Image 1 (cartoon, helix red, strand yellow):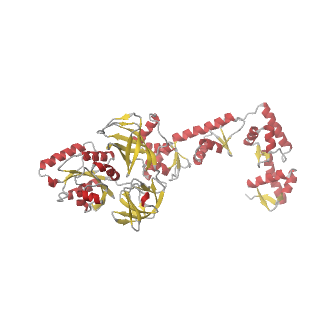
Image 2 (cartoon, rainbow, N blue to C red):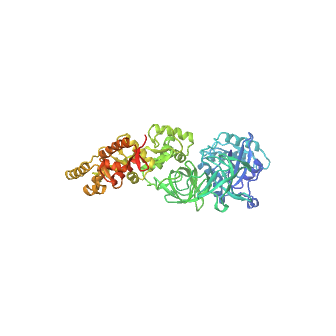
Length: 632
């Protein structure tokens, strides 16, 4: 499905030409019909000679309604550029051409209309020559020019064929699996409810799909779909689509919002963009200028932050960070337009590089400039890597969306990045990349590794008597996701850069060395454990005798083993107890707590805590009042 958009000066015959081509007059408002002037967007459709159905967005040409024009021109595949033969190039001819140029509408046909009002063939030749000069260096350079009359029908068949040719040479809209429909019209139908229309991009919708309207949190369900007043079960990318949405009130929806699947797009108040200032702009563009931003069907106020420059002169290009008080929905690669609010003037536009930058950039940072350069001109590998670097860690689906790449292309690029170790697969299996596979950019990974090692080193310096750091404490201080942290530890242990035992982690070169006084205290405590292996000092007694740090060190070193919040044994005594339990079970079958207590010549408290610990460890199994060895 393709969509053609008209462009051109007011009263050059755009709407009349569309009616002649399609049989549908696109002016739908009473005021438009009375004034014979297009004010808002109009819509029509027809079949080309080869049978392909094509939609038409007819835009107003008057300068007072240029902003209505911008709401409809962004989703078109080709332009039908209309110039009246009796007037030639006029102010909105040039402004509409500049807009098409900014939006990179690279396909188009020029209709030289009202030829029935010109008797002199040489005049038509002069107008054509003027147009070719005007189009030099623009997206319409080399575009076919067809002389037509909507009133008499002259050469309309030739115009049909030329439109068919340019559309055949332009690629179809890709299905990226994440549809969005920028809303350019909202209305209600009695008995059906809210209906929105727009040009569908990036995916397809099906009747019954749950959708969300952004910005905002409104959710609904697709009750019905139409394309060119024909009921459809499925709407495809590039089609003019009307959606009947249940669960959404008419008063809550407006032009500029976007219909999408839940959790696929995030509204943003900040964007990184590449920008071209038009050569005929009346003023240079300065930092902190307030402008109007047009993207999709949305129109919002934005403030310009110039990156890497204090000012752009007419005809210059640069990087901007746009900040908006009202959120918009955008994707990487979207085209946009900027206009001065007063006096109204189109000043330029460009392409979205990052629709959701994490923070406000330092304006003259070399790293920021290098990143924007890579996003703007980089290879697919650089684009995907930069998108991932911005997020640090993300799923494949998230980074594919941020890079605005098709699934197959993104997977191919990712394989290269994984092979070159520029991207890390946190799930540990680079060969099975799924949409929810967690990925990390190598620079972010290295920064995170450095941070983890620094936390361990700092902890060792602060607590030299403690063998290791609780891993959960390390993760909490790093403020990273559990999956990334687990992947970091796995790799660092494999590389022998970190040692892990249980829930403790430490650096390989860290050793606990006791001074003479500390060693004496430890020796005295361990002697007490040796003298009464199954009635040893409690945890409270041990800490009172040698201090918290020394006690925790003995636990981390595996010398002491706490079996409850009160009772602790030497590890070697616990291991002996496991052997003793096996002997008791062999002798009695199922042994009682009293039998174990008598065997170890201790008190009930120690035996109960010890056996409950063995239960938790899967060594023993409680059966009634007794215990037996658990089958293995």
